[in-house]
Length: 442
Image (cartoon, rainbow, N blue to C red):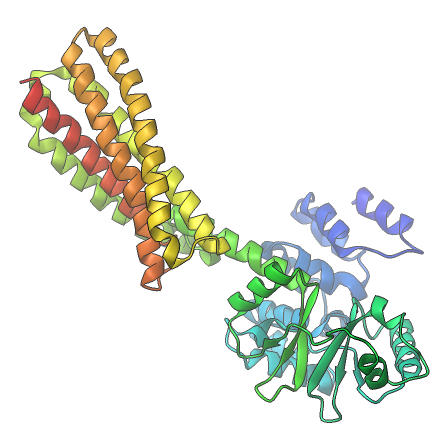
């Protein structure tokens, strides 16, 4: 509480950063949080809410009246308005509808427009606030108009002026630093024609997959990208901060999928919901564990005749599992980053198998020596060494093949990969170790 009061006091006459306030609120307990929310200016509390984890949103909404929520949303850009309304709808749909009705007509139209796009489409992530100038507009007139809008707080984070035709079809994108070199008395068209430069911007289409737009930002190092419809009409822009959020969401989803959990369920405070989603994957894991135990059961007589096998066999399975997880993590991540194409599949498989085999030989020697010294049986060292090589080879092979195959058939390579790989390394590890022991030692 005191930390928040001090921050607001120090920034009374300067810009308040919602992320700073969000960091302070994270440290408060529930009783302190409710008091702290009353101190935050309504005009920035919408920004603060979107900076915080979802579990804080309920407290923020309950602390504000409909009029205050309306004011908070008005201060947001269109893409953030949509996110806020969607979050509010999940908590209290009636209140969300009432707040929506209190918004300006233009805000309502913008929200409805963005909500009309599918979740994977670029249009769902754009903001409609863009600064544009007509191709035959005098540069000085556009600068005066820009200056007025900026002073009134109607535009922010503008780095590029988009030049359009009279019917709003996108022609050019000109950075502000380039505009400073223009002849202000001439039109944009005249300035552009006098220069031997290409001002045609990289653009995204509103129905385009957002994954493609993420790649544009990575490839061309963009700060913003204009969004046009099928007729080339400028309908909005997507900024780098939205792309960073998408990349973080994708990375989080990928990590959760590798662990066999659902990202949406984990962000929800409902314990039962999270329990159910985790139980689904744990049930599949239980089946694979039973399968591995069945393999062990086949060699029960072999294990009974030599207790050392029971002591050593978890090592083989564990090493294979860990080696496979290393390969799987590297391949899945490279696929997500676009570093692997379908033509690279053979190269990746060869590389990962080679790495796993080299490690297999290394740890086969180490474990063979340990087994020989531990149990005073030379051939036992040979058995576990050979088994280690076999299992690490399979771990490298399947750890790379499984995600590549899933990607090929259009399935997220992170989903199910871990379960399949664990089954392979456990079954192969136990079968190779106990099978070789039956052939060589007995």
